Length: 69
Image (cartoon, rainbow, N blue to C red; front, side):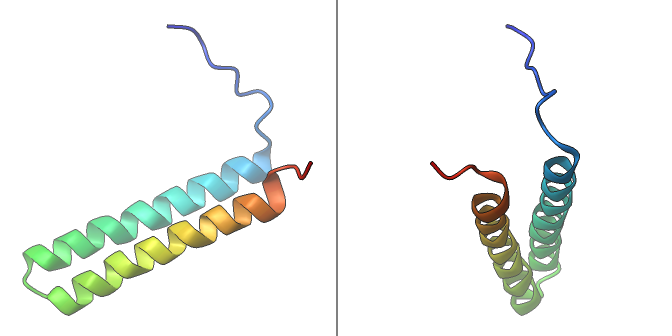
């Protein structure tokens, strides 16, 4: 095992990553909770919104944070 150097991660990238991780996994866990409560429509909507937020996160990463060569 070696240490990972994260000194090159900027504050905007960290904030965007943290917000989208909280949003994506929050919606996913809420959707699973709604499924256990047998409210399937709300559960599938939350899981779908989780997938959409993940896709938006990938698009934002590609547009703003990944260098174009």
